[in-house]
Amino acid sequence: NAGVMQNPRHLVRRRGQEARLRCSPMKGHSHVYWYRQLPEEGLKFMVYLQKENIIDESGMPKERFSAEFPKEGPSILRIQQVVRGDSAAYFCASSKLAGVYNEQFFGPGTRLTVL
Amino acid sequence: AQSVTQPDIHITVSEGASLELRCNYSYGATPYLFWYVQSPGQGLQLLLKYFSGDTLVQGIKGFEAEFKRSQSSFNLRKPSVHWSDAAEYFCAVGANNNDMRFGAGTRLTVKP
Image (tube, rainbow over all chains, first blue to last red; front, side):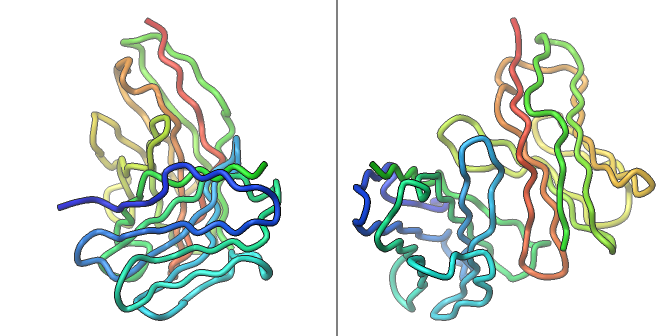
């Protein structure tokens, strides 16, 4: 059973470009979470999605950031017009059921560098 | 909202020595508490978790943690550290929703 997959593992963008980060949850998991990790900091919750629905986006910046989890295919975190401050590691996690008491399995992350 | 503090940014221990990583949380109700380990360039792996019951929980790789409500702490321990334990360790607290808050992490270096 493959774990949570994220691609690309490393992404380099110039300021003003768009970044698309993909996350395929574990088989049988319909809950996806995105976190951002800035250098020397812990993970910060961004958004929680179920299939075709955004459940909680309280941690997502109001502008330039969006997330989706379509019926078919991976979850996508999209960052428009990237700025240097967006450089970070972005982690996706998935769980089989909702609620923090259900273990979240983490992917290896996408490291975004904005030049 | 819940929050987590890991007071130690970086800890160095000798191989074979005991280890304790500190974690303090802030939350009004009984929290869900977690310890994760992150190896360089990797995602997070769950070491152990506490929801209720016995306050001393056993995890993988020989780790254990003790929930102390009076001190709002959930410290991680290992009696004898191995070189492969060198990594970043994160404490996290979850509430009765889907929001999990992570500490800033403690980086563990193991000396030969």
